[in-house]
Length: 181
Length: 78
Image (cartoon, rainbow over all chains, first blue to last red):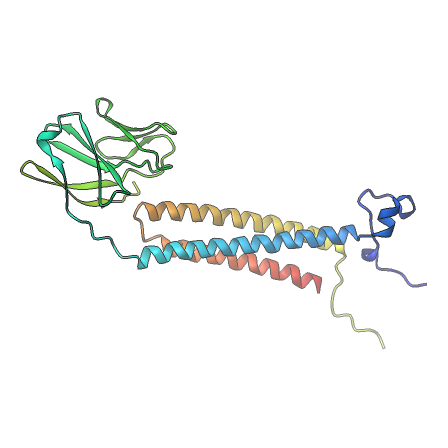
């Protein structure tokens, strides 16, 4: 009498003997432990594929970082000093209409400009000059007005700073500085 | 003549346990890779360029580890 490999026997999920199983399960017997094993192995294959996708994503970021050319920032006039009072803000777009920026006159001789998009999820920030902060109403992030650095909330990075040049009464935007901290 | 048995037979329930352990490790590695990807993207958006290559190498090593583990699983079945 040959001894069957116990791995080959079909084991119904409820564990009852074959004689107690419903007719449909007798007609379509499935090796449940093998089915479980195969489905978990397929899950492992899928996870390794996901792992490969993450490597592709990392490679794409690296390629963009090292082979993307540094942008040439145009020099753009954005307003006049005499048109902005102390404590006032001016919304402008630099270098194109897709990038809204905020110019703030923090004091008599202090002009600051930052990206208006919050670094969390790109909501427009509001300058509150009296509190010396930029406030994002979406998730209550706050940035320091003078430095653009994160004070509180979910934003991960400071606001990109717009470099300004003042010639006489005219204010020019000459570049943007991305920062990690 | 005695049949040559050069492979140790691993019962299926033991293979399933081994597979479960390997799956746990793979899941952990994939979670680490996901965190690495988000941190790298954050660094890139902040203007950092120095970390990108190191992050790519680490992610590739994680993938190589996952691939090795999967290869071991398929070896078990042969």
